[in-house]
Length: 148
Image (cartoon, rainbow, N blue to C red):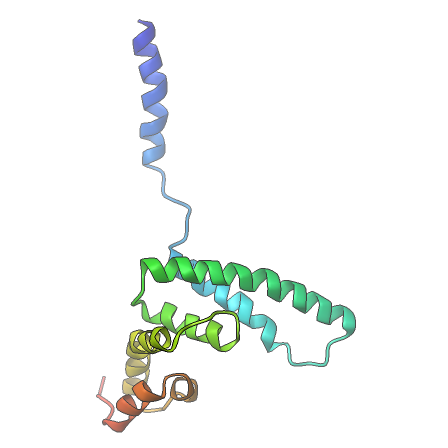
């Protein structure tokens, strides 16, 4: 009788918790959010007071360390995700991530689909894509835009 009660006490909570939705965000969304938070500190282009400069420095150090970890984890799980690839390129350009030229090229290729879709809709060239990924931009913008 004790064995049955103990089994019920162990099995029922496990079965009930298995049906609960997971509260974790997917690693890609989490990494992109962390990267945006990190790079948002660089957007403060006003002439800050010394106190605000310290706040920016502390916030940047905290948020960018989180972004680096999240980006590394997400890239391992989803190396070809276009939005993640572009976000990591932004993080690299901001100086908070270190990519080899091979990795940078691979991320440019992965992010290409974002800009193909944009170019097909608007026929407008993205200057940031042009600067970060000149080889892929040259290939994309040298051909006529596809009608969507």
